Amino acid sequence: MVAAKATVKAVALISGANNIRGSLQFVQDSNGTTHVKGRISGLSPGLHGFHIHALGDTTNGCNSTGPHFNPLKKDHGAPTDGERHAGDLGNIYAGLDGTAEVSIEDRHIPLSGLHSILGRAVVVHADPDDLGRGGHELSKTTGNAGARVGCGIIGLQSAV
Image 1: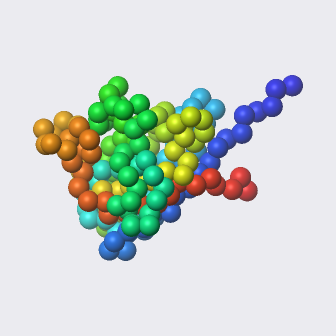
Image 2: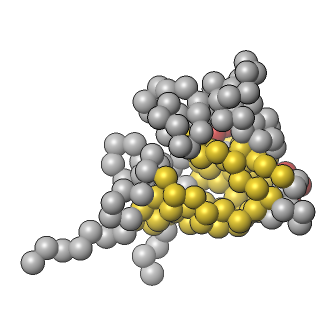
């Protein structure tokens, strides 16, 4: 009898300036896809860049989370691009009430293995991510997404 592979789950509690708050749940299914679901409030209405950053360090707020998670040393891009950082998750949209409902599926952000995102940070930016297509000097590194307004460290979640 073959034992079923356990589902790996993680959570990130988001906090930031201007009362930005939220929580995100990460669930990796058996085919390797990680599902990110949750809600973030306190944002300005509109699009906000949304990325996994390399470090789970918030000693200096969101500024100490390092660059985008990019283990394969690629240029910045959209989540659907072949050329992208592993941590490039595109944009989330906050409605007029400043709340973003997050629902993302991605195969480049595993919760286990060599390129696991556990212990890293998820970051919400002030501005939209131009997905590497903006022609700005920062387009190919950060998507020119502006300041880091909210972040949280990705940690293992209890199975209970």
